[in-house]
Structure formats: structure tokens, C-alpha cells
Image (cartoon, rainbow, N blue to C red; front, top):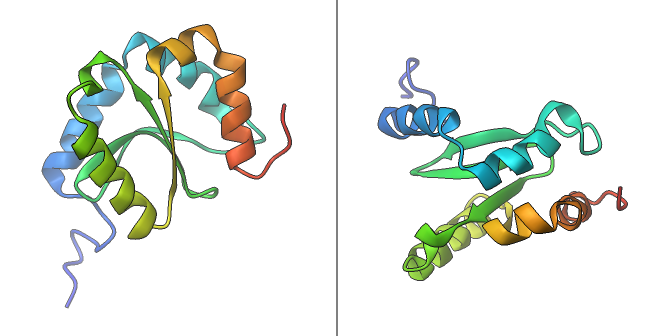
Length: 126
């Protein structure tokens, strides 16, 4: 029997709470990309920022396209194994496509990043 207060698709309460905090604390590159993803600016797609999926929090998520977009900064330098495990789980278990971009790419090549996101969504280049 499912708990009606906590449906099966919801992330644990602690993860949801942390995601809420992270939404208020976007990094500069995350905010830079968010300004291009928000309000359906990429082919009308609805993106969520700092979205909880299972035990993970992803930077940006588009449910309709089953797409996760991650912006990796210097803090990811020592987390290669963790990032690979997380990407594998999101892809294999949830069926999501995961795109990763560096802070540098987002800041200096934003148009190319948005184009890659649009292509992953199956849309023509903007």
C-alpha cells in the first residue's frame, strides 16, 4: 500500500528540502543558463531548476524531453566516480538523457550550450 502523503514518485523529504535551498543559491553559471531555459524560451519546453529525482538533485530537468542538464564547476573535479554513477542511474533506471557542461562552456559559449540542449530535445537548432 502506498503512503498517500508521500507518493512513490517523490524524492525523500530531505532531498526535496535541499533542492529548495539550492534553487535560492544558484551559481553564477547556473543562473546564466537558467535565464535562457526559463519560461519556455527553448521551444516552449518547461525546465525545472535544482530538481530532486530519487536521491539526487539535478541542475535542470525537462520532464517532457526526459532531459537532465548538469553544469559542472570546480567542485566536480574529485567527483568523477559519483557523477558517472549518478548519470548511469538517471539514464538506465529513469531513462533520462544527461547532458553535462562546464561552467566555462556555459559562461563563454552559451549559444552553443543552448543549441546542444535543443538538439538533445529533438528540436532543430535555434
